[in-house]
Length: 285
Ligand SMILES: C[C@@](CO)(OP(=O)(O)O)[C@H](O)COP(=O)(O)OP(=O)(O)OC[C@H]1O[C@@H](n2ccc(N)nc2=O)[C@H](O)[C@@H]1O
Ligand SMILES: Nc1ncnc2c1ncn2[C@@H]1O[C@H](COP(=O)(O)OP(=O)(O)O)[C@@H](O)[C@H]1O
Image (tube, rainbow, N blue to C red; front, side, top):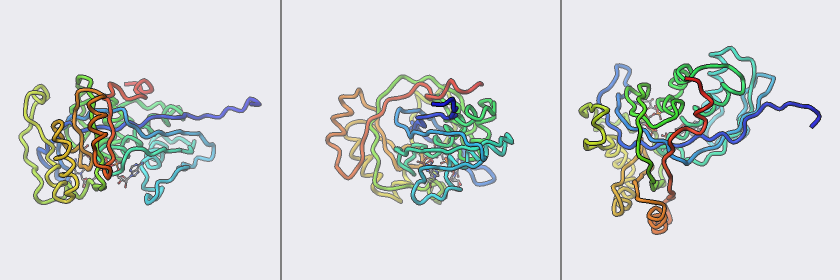
């Protein structure tokens, strides 16, 4: 091809997460809520490609309808990395969006994390994991978890991350036909904000729940309907601030049977746990 070097990274995954439980244990002076949660990576993902450009511009070649470019999380992540490192290079970003927005699967945060990890490599900016996580936290509370790249007990607002080893598992995930804005759930007056803190050693043996679930179900009754329906087959719970609902199942066959009987107005799919972020090896700790 005439010796022209095109610097690009294609098909970089941005995996989703499930919050196996989520407890709100307090509130910071700035209004942000202190949580305790186990975050688990799953093998459903958005896909991103990055091509370097010499003019310093950041362009999203596949804009998301309804999200202005300067609010889009990949563009914001790329711009913040440029500013923090003084890098003069730019990038054209292509985002193939598969994860629902406002679904509690962390899709936007994961897109931002993948952008930081990939551009740090493409631009040769050489930031280490902790430095990228600090940039990520400015974009969203879930971003540092995706940069850390493995299942974790997460505290604070998302910045205190302790890796945990979980047994591999299969899940059914149902996407109710509603988009839940995270801020609206946290703002609700009736939200439980005083759950008793638990120790990391205890979470597997203690009863857990998602403290955001009751408020989300009140605002969006469709979420409660999904929890009730999926609960016929296995204990079902909402992830994050909703709207998606998940249940752990025995195997792929059981998942397929449940999905086959799912009412047609709900999107349902199965997912396997993911031991490591697919780009895990691109980061130096
Ligand atoms: C609750 C979680 C659990 O994973 O849910 P999902 O959003 O993934 O569903 C996250 O911590 C969400 O993180 P993220 O989605 O990045 O939230 P952000 O954009 O940082 O925050 C949106 C708004 O929610 C409120 N907020 C968020 C996180 C938090 N710990 N306390 C809050 O009070 C704040 O009002 C904030 O302005
Ligand atoms: N690349 C992106 N993907 C998804 N949402 C984005 C993106 N960029 C900006 N957003 C905004 O962030 C909000 C939260 O997105 P997302 O992380 O998918 O939600 P949640 O984790 O609550 O499911 C969206 O409703 C949207 O307005």
